[in-house]
Length: 370
Ligand SMILES: Cc1cc2nc3c(=O)[nH]c(=O)nc-3n(C[C@H](O)[C@H](O)[C@H](O)COP(=O)(O)O)c2cc1C
Image (cartoon, rainbow, N blue to C red; front, side):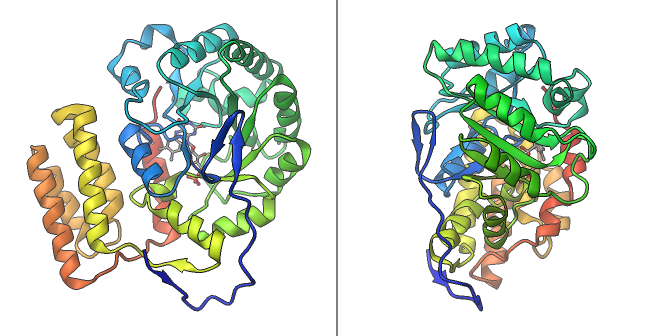
């Protein structure tokens, strides 16, 4: 890993205390992978953890018991081989069902339970789960109390992810944060948008700073962190204990080591070699096929490959070609050849622009399901 000192007229390295605890778990650093349904499956979480993230939250698991035997939920509760602490996000609207869901996941290896009050997806919010819960503070608190009570008996910390509020006029993150802390939540992640905003506009960090100032538990800042510089800016603006990165890690899981390096040294880590990305992506794909099997694996891998090659010369034609391939072996060969071709042109992987990273969230969110 070579470090380059690109023109960066920076003040001395920004002091960032990388030690971080969630309950009794000490993390190697404070860089967290945001939960993303349809994205942060076990293979992707493991790769992010290998490339610099200390912690990754699973895709949400529904509290609706009748879905627990479904293939989708059983995959989301499969943590075999994943380095701990294993954090599982649960979603639902009923305190008793949420407490049961927490224990169900603890029995399947969850070491930390995260409550979803952050996801704006319609399939979640129409049922009043996810960020919709922020509108009903009493219910939100009952859910937290029930989940904390259930998890206390197993010594499992409870964390919670939320937005800044329901809408611009109703930004109640600070009030809720205080109540959740009193109820026993041990870390909060705050996405700097309201539910109403969805993914539109830009994340604001003042409310996250206000949450951080209002509580004593660790706070992770989330929203539009797309580069090491942005990471430092968000830390400075919010005073947060941790950073949570979502979309910018899609197709770019090495962003965590880039941020870690920049925060520790004030210098930029050189972009990875094309040969390194080739190795990571092929390992990711093999792991993905093992996890999902050939039929689903082949199809669901396409979006990941699309994210890795986004913006590269010839990527549009390549993506169209990929859609016609009908076996994992053919997909692997095509990816290897594409990246070999890129390697003949350049040594290092080009950096993505922030805009392209955040551009296609609408399409991604259409796929979000419990
Ligand atoms: C495809 C997708 C799926 C998501 N699924 C969840 C989820 O299951 N639970 C949750 O709390 N947030 C979910 N989110 C929100 C992210 O965790 C994160 O808060 C959001 O993307 C903002 O962070 P970012 O700008 O770093 O992407 C999802 C976001 C995306 C793009």
